[in-house]
Structure formats: structure tokens, C-alpha cells
Amino acid sequence: MKQKITLLILICVLTITALAVIQGYFIYNTYKLQEREVKSLVTQELLDIETSGKLDSINKSWMIKTGRFINDYTQGRATKEDYALLIKKTADSLSPVMSDYIKHKKLVGDYDVTYSNYVKVVRLQDQSSKVIDTLYKGKLKLFSNNITNAEETEASESRWRESTTATPESPGTYDFEIVTSRYYSISNWERQVLYKMSGLLLFSVGLLAMVIGLFYWSIKNLISQKKIADVKTDFINNITHEFQTPIAALTIAVATLKKKDTGLSEEQFYNSLSIIDRQNQRMQKLFAQISDASVGAGQIDISGATHINTEYIQQAIADFSISHPQAVISFSGNPSAVLYMDSFHFTTLLNNLLDNSVKYGADTIEVIFEQSALGSAVYIKDNGRGIPPEHQAAIFDKFYRIDTGNVHNTKGLGLGLFYVKQIITAYHGKISVSSDEGKGSIFTLSLPIA
Ligand code: ADP
Image 1 (cartoon, rainbow, N blue to C red):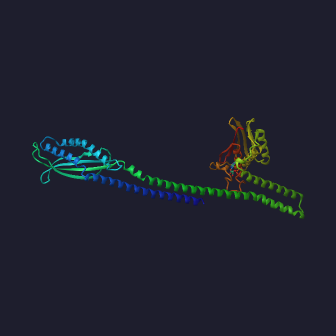
Image 2: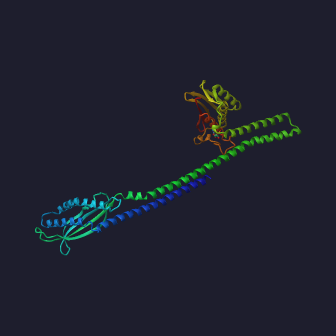
Image 3: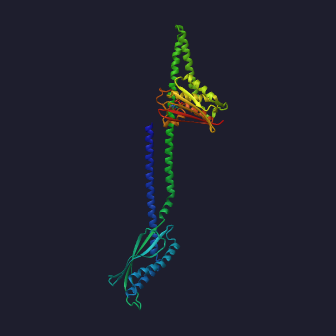
């Protein structure tokens, strides 16, 4: 069964992982698809701007300035370095126009799109398009819509061929070629795409969480059902074992008594009677344990609570010692200490704890009784076999026995400590254990001030 559960957990984990990977893969693909869609939409919109002729006036402006510069350059009134300055100045005046235009037209939807145009090359050419001189080579911004995004993607390149216009100062005309390049970048497209996909993302995460929750809940249920089934099986095994001895003894005693007519000595008669009596008592005790344990803490009647003093406890210990002479039980503590509990309940719980100490290997037991401003405490310290740490919290559970599977070793139904806890809880107290395996245990009962 344990192997089956482990296998089931493994299958669940694998299924969830596979589901998560498949979902992740689909989400990633959708993201990539959306990204491509956004980029192609923006590129298309920018292309539309360029081909619509709306930028003609802007382009004309820098083109005319470049023609005039070439006139000046060829007449020696300007140097190549001056071209960069001229374009920078031109960009400063053209960029706001461009920004306004894009904003006004809302051309690129909700995206923060940087659209920039750069001069890459300016060359002087002769009639046969042969390059005479290169005025500029690099990347000079002509205009942009002023939003500055880090990564730019080159969208397209244009080649412009023009001629200078002759003026009185520059009578000759020159052919020139300008290469310009357009770049764009979209700064918040990731956010936008994710926003668009948020419904899908939430749905996927919710679905996965639901599957995980369902698996967790099912496995938890299965484990707890298995625990309950194990506990029930153990209980049936234990109870069968516990009743086997008295029933066998009773069968023998009854068989002996039946021999009455064939001569039964008086000794045999009283012997059988005492066996019947002892086994009857034992079965009653077992029955009492089972019925006691079926009572919840809330159902324990605490109306008979009185002050129990050291004398009472010492007497209860002495009574216990008579039937358990193999153990030395000492008592110490505050002589004036008292605790508030029904004496029957107290004797039952003390007997249960002392009985456990003897049953689980102790030959020396120490009972300490103390009282402080916080309440009363009883410590039962034994030198028995101790309780392994992993079992310490569970021993107060119903039917819990550490030596399950080894039922012949020590008798019990796993109900003693459960009942002790029920009593203590009914009086709003607490019980705890600390133990060193192989060395002994200390059970601590603490009760509030009455
Ligand atoms: P039972 O004694 O019938 O098994 P209990 O509820 O009294 O049931 O105890 C539960 C388990 O706790 C026991 O099976 C035993 O293994 C362990 N235990 C209880 N008291 C002691 C003790 N003093 N020393 C060692 N083990 C103990």
C-alpha cells in the first residue's frame, strides 16, 4: 500500500510537471505570436507614414539645407565637420514636428514607439554617378519623435539623389546622393503583450493550482484513510489478543468445574472460581477502557472536582504499589501543593501512567508534585525504555501504540494515554512527554489553579 501511494505521488508529480511544461510551452508560443503581431503592426503603420507623403515637407527641409551646404562646401565656405553641426541643428527643429505628428495621428496605437531617421552617407557625384567626394559617413539623427528607447531596429533604408541649385555665389550645380536609414523601437510592448495575455495567464495558473490542489487533497485523503484503516486493523488485532487470554482461561476453568461429578477437589474448585473472577475483572477492565475512550473530553463530568493533596496522591501510589511490587515508586514535592480534580479521574490517570511505566520497562518511578502561582504540576518520571522522538506527539492519539505488530510483547489497546489526555483536557490542563530513548520518560501534567 505504501509503495502504491509513493507510486501515485510520483505519477501525480510527473503529470503536474508535464502539464506545467505543456502549458508553459503554449503560453510562450502565444507570447511570441503576439510579439510578432505587435512588431508587424508597428512596422506597417510606420511604413504607411513614410509612403503617405506626410513626411515630404520634413524631408524636403533637410534636403534643401544639405544642398545649400554642398554649395558652401564646394566654394570653401564650410568644412565637412560643419555638416554634422548643421544636421544636429536641423534635427532639433524637426523632431518636435515629428513627435506632434505621431501623437496627433495616434499612429502607433498604445505603444511607445521611437521612430528615428538617420543620415548615413552623403556623397558628391559626377554626371556618371561616380563618387567625387564623401562629405559624411556615420549615423546622424535627422529627426525622431523624441521618445528615447535603448534598442532600435533598422526598418528600411532610402537613397536620395538630388542636384544643388545654382546661385550667384555658387554658379555650378552638383549631384549628390544621400543614404538615410529609419529605425524604430517599442519600449512597452512586453508589458502590453503580457497585459493582453493576462486573462490566459491567470486562467492557466488557476487551472494548474486547481489540479495541484485536487491531487494534494486526494493523496492527503488517501493517506489519512490508510492511517485510519491501519489503526483499526491494529485495534482489532490488539483486542483479539487481549480477549484471547481471559477466554482461554475461562474455558479451562469452566471445563474443570464441569468435572464436579467425577471428583473435584475443593482446592481445584476455588482455584477455578478465582480464575473466573480474575478473568471477569480483566475483561471488565478492558471493556471499561474501551467505553472510557469513546467519551469525548467535553462529556467528562468534572462537577465532582475537589482539592487533591499530597496525602491522597501518596495513598494512590501505595495502592498501586501493592499490585505492582516489582517497581519502586518514590514521591516528592511540595507538601502543601494541591490540585483540583475529581479523585476518581485523578486515580484513573495516575494508575494509567504508572501502569504504562511498569509495562514499558521501568523499575524505578518518581512522582513529583508541585504547585506555583501558575498552577499545579505532576511529573511521572520513569527509567523505562523511553519513547522515540517521532512517536512522542502521537502517543496521545486514540489506538496509537508504538509496538504495533509486536502485540505479544506488551498488552494494550492504545487507549490509556488517550483517555488520560481526555481527562486532563476536560480540566483545562495539559499533558506532555519528554523522553530519552533507552533511558526513560517524563510525563508532565499541568493543571490551572482552581
Ligand atoms: P497502550 O499502553 O495500551 O499501548 P497507551 O495509550 O497507554 O496505550 O500508550 C501508547 C503508547 O505509548 C504505548 O503503546 C507505548 O508504546 C508508549 N508509552 C506510553 N507510556 C510509556 C512509557 N512510560 N514508557 C515508554 N513508552 C510508553
